[in-house]
Amino acid sequence: MHNPSLKQESRYEPAKVVPLPDEPDMLEWLSAQGRIIKREQDEKPASVESEDLDLLEIEGDYYDAEDSDDDFDIDDDED
Image 1 (tube, one colour):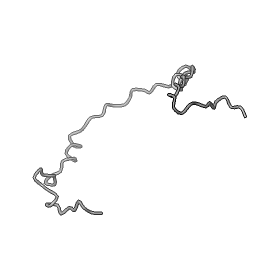
Image 2 (cartoon, rainbow, N blue to C red; image 1 turned 120 degrees about the horizontal axis):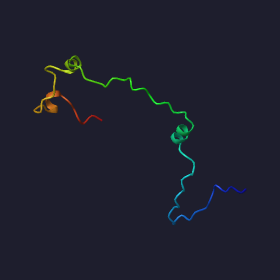
Image 3 (tube, rainbow, N blue to C red; image 1 turned 90 degrees about the vertical axis):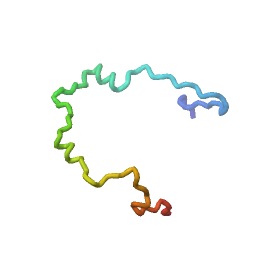
């Protein structure tokens, strides 16, 4: 059976570079066919409200640099 897609290459020789096809990629093809519709710029830029920041604040329950695993009763050697 003859299959021109299959070629035998030497194991110890560097692989040959596969040439790029001459046809355009999908995005270029869609653009050439007029099938790409640009989005409207009606979106507002995202901004952080002060109310949102207030919700993120945590009082009194934070990690202290002086804390160690012993303070939290954590066993690192669990198997």
